[in-house]
Image (cartoon, rainbow, N blue to C red; front, side, top):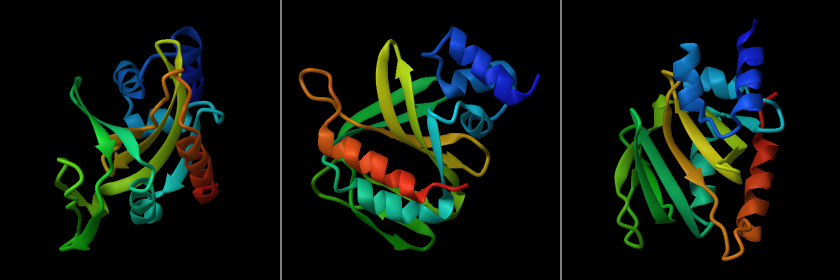
Amino acid sequence: MTLSQQVHDILAETPAMLPAEIAGQLNASELEVIRAMPADMVTMIDASHYLEVLRDIKTWGELTLVIDVDGSIFEMVGHFPKGGEKFGYYNLSDRRTPLKGHLKLNNVSAIALVSKPFHGVPTRSIQFLSTTGRTLFKVYLRRDKEQNFLPEQLEKFEALKKLATA
């Protein structure tokens, strides 16, 4: 059975399972699992668009940033910080947000726009994947009081699909 068939079977049985969990179960990388997910769940963007995507999402308003390190999950709600390039890094340096850091530019191999349920609720995220196939960080769209995606963010998320790789 191919990886794609295995991933499809797992998601059919357990739609809320995270790509990292599937990767562990199948002894595959997160990137391999994400690429094997159903086409209606994932749009892949080439890493050459990394800076373009980072610069775009900083205009989206409040987002949820998620960093998962071996099962420990860190979340931060706020504006994605502006930044600039220097010495091979995109340096986050925005006074509007406490998030600071240095994103290594040549360590991103792909960007995935992921649309999948989690605990029965639809989610939309932009996932940045490393050259080792692991997720570096994810940025999730926010919701209003009625649990609907913010229309402006959903529109911008869909617009990023124009950068898709074949």
